[in-house]
Image (tube, rainbow, N blue to C red):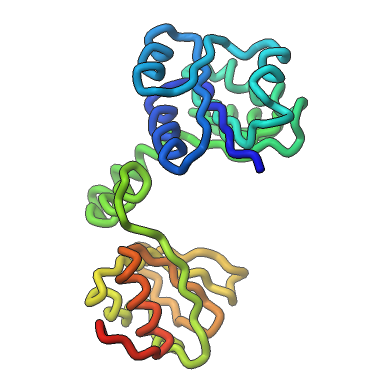
Length: 236
């Protein structure tokens, strides 16, 4: 099973991705063409490779097409990200390629080139600012999960016919609070499994088959799950 990734560009986003994947046990290879970025990556203990990756032979030598599971093209050069995405896709049709772009036009080009997912750093920043102003606690919790060694986890809880929440409206749910659980939203089966964020204020009726997405400590999540399905628990 592949468990190695290449991060092309040790940028601010590249640093965060590298730390997350390193904590999850992935073998992380940092590729950059800026001396200071490579020096920083080396000091932080990562395998590094000095290259622009504009040569297919280098991609092959690093494991594209054999041992690499995912490629993150997050360098500060949009042209390089596009070229590397295209080259890597030609070498490996099943490779997961995540790239960044600053405009819709760039995003379209990257998708055509073969990117699996395109991220817009500007949109991500705007979303974080909005969340900080409207839901600062939620943003803090999500940051703890994504960018630290927090013991918080994200869990999915299926609503069954006998569930205490079957037939309830989303706004009516308050029981999660006494379990120290943060309710992110719900997957609605009647809407083709579309995800409804709790923060959007949609008063959705919860039905059998829907899935709650919640955040909390493992023990609290277990107690909340047992409460919902009606299992006796001393913590209730």
